[in-house]
Image (cartoon, rainbow, N blue to C red; front, top):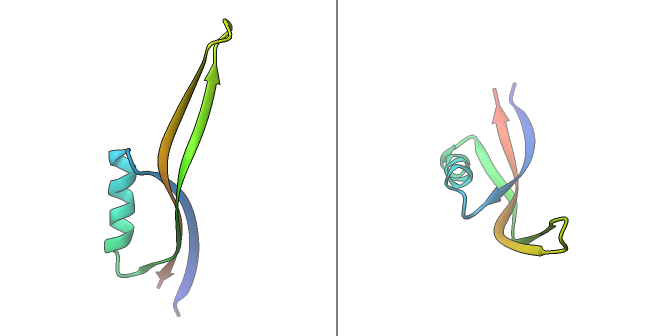
Length: 69
């Protein structure tokens, strides 16, 4: 009997490890991506002196299903 397991994960496009994992999901015949969104994730950090830094990272938000035997 087959079961379907649902997954969700955020993948940073500029991160080699994240993209390797994302490509493994794409290449796995037991996995099917059901929804993928591209967004820019914005992070603002500040220090004790009042200086702030903004970082914008392109990100995939991915939902997929995996068939499990």
